[in-house]
Length: 354
Image 1 (cartoon, rainbow, N blue to C red):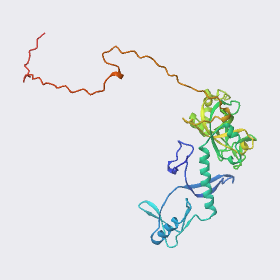
Image 2 (tube, one colour):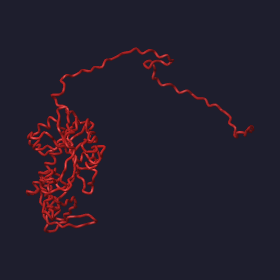
Image 3 (cartoon, rainbow, N blue to C red):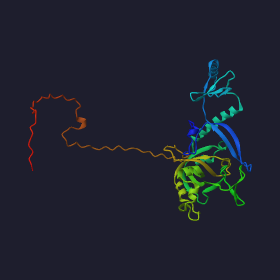
Image 4 (cartoon, rainbow, N blue to C red):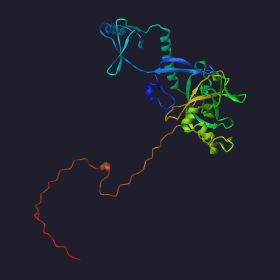
């Protein structure tokens, strides 16, 4: 699925997911200077690519070593090179102290290779369309993995709250503690004004069963074009007292979606039978057959086409029928030219006055 990476300069607000290849340049904790509370991690990411030039014997030795590698994928580590700039582009040039290593057995590179393998496995997993029955029977190997399924939304539950109060720092749900909102996870701090995000509980189905799925905030915003604050302050949606379920959120009912679900350990252990969606897509034109084999009818209906013969009446024209007509080429008639005289000038005629 992800056959290319996006540049950091291309990232914008029109999408919620981007595929990028970056390097962590710096990483540090974010701590409140007043309360010394942990707020999260800050990091600097870069995706700068540089050209590499090896000169003379060093370049020849690198070429020989690269050709001698039996592995299909080679990780190259260049040490002690100098960064130069030529015609506006960055280059790495070698000096006598420069060294290169091909597929070194280093723990960081082993983790890098494992991450690539995991990425390929996730792409293969997302390429398959699961049924609800298959999702309910997934094993431990699918914990924290994303799977896709094609479902129809049967009902949007109105008895549950359609939004949740979240911590602006870590994004976790916050509750009131002694009359004040407080984040009880990593932040461990009071929240004067929590963020509000959609939390829509739906009942979805396909030919194999029914599944309770919670739709995510960013996908709901993308589809309806509104935030929680917009609907919460609209009396036509929530009523004068704010207790009415918004009719705008009922538009998800009776619609088909391709839902990407993140499988949690609670789902695998059957502790929680409610699944959380990560992404919503419109159904594709051809999704294949998702109906389980046991639900298909074993009967096969034989449709035969009857041949109907009709008598075609002779057309009432002088031309013969097609089967009796001749394809023999006809001769070309000789044309005799006829002489005619043309006046050199056309005399002017007088117009009658009315």
